[in-house]
Image 1 (cartoon, rainbow, N blue to C red):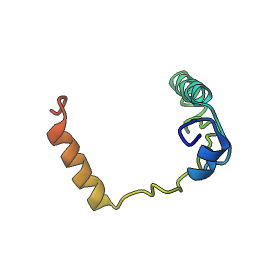
Image 2: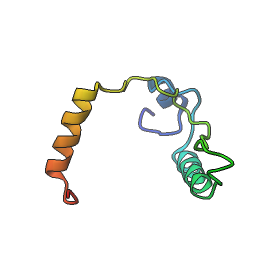
Image 3: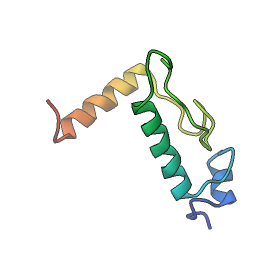
Image 4: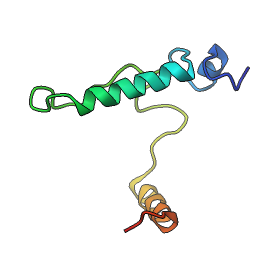
Amino acid sequence: MRRDFGSHLTAALNDWQFAVSYGELMTALQTQSVLNVNRDEKEHPDPIRLPMPWPEGTGKHADVTPEERAALRAQLLRRSAFAS
């Protein structure tokens, strides 16, 4: 049950606001992407944000410090096949 992406148990364990299936989430992310790519940036300068189940800017995976982020990016670049 814990592995069922759309279960209320998974939503509760991840501090989500509502349960959502994998397909619904992928559809919402794709829709948000298409809306943002095709929006008039002069009329709508801010990106369109559709409701997502997780709380915005909070959760178990809090943001890292700038120093940690720089170290993680450097580590990623060392391992990347696309590093310039």
